Length: 328
Image 1 (cartoon, rainbow, N blue to C red):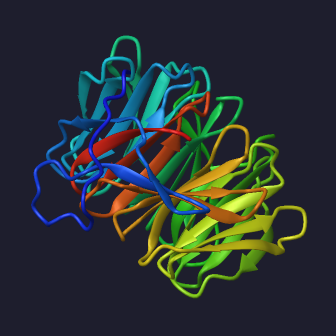
Image 2: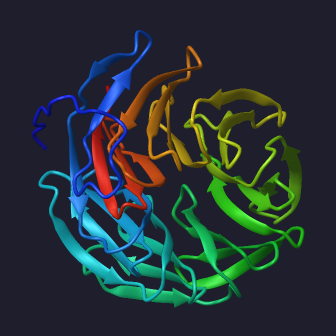
């Protein structure tokens, strides 16, 4: 897209502003600098999840309005509306970009969509409560879904559309799930015990548990090299864990309220986070410092995602909009 410079606005945004101002502060001198961007409108309720297609041409968004929407990144146009039928809590593309998965709330289902034909391929039943997250394995053969049904993560075979395994932990709810880059392990977050769980995907064995957050939290992502794992929490922190030892390596602090999501840039250089404080923040993995605060949303930032080339960042919010940011 072609960015249009915008005058530096005042902050904070007055609640109810139809188009909140969009700008960023960039460290370390905290000098004001505009970030090229575009706002995507169409959802009629909170945007809960965003994901780029593997080829970087499309963005998928899930919402509490019960729809999954596809957007053309070049034009910013909405190109499809897929009706899940219940609040959509999570969306994910398969590694080859052919299938889109959506996880639902009240209907307790995972739905699979053909990205080319825009038709529903399957409805996966098994969960007995809300689904909090869906994630494809790196080879695209499996899908993991986590939810609020007493400590169960379900693994599905994408070819057969059948459940092949249920990973049973404690009786606590699972609030996030992520595959390691090699596909051998699966990480999950459970509440209210606030534990990180590491599972062997082949055997279903729980091989490690880690604890560090002081409040409700979720698993976000592995680093591209698999050496670190990101977790976010209502305690306002983003924590990074060494996957080989379970040692907490880095704690990012700066958000004023709970952190809803975080992710690594494709090169592992940056971490982006979204928070209930309405901001998106960027963190440098080399200096371990906050390097940018992106303003523009007027409600909780629920989800963040980098494009495959790392040049764009998408943020979805409870203000019903998505913002595309150019990464500095």
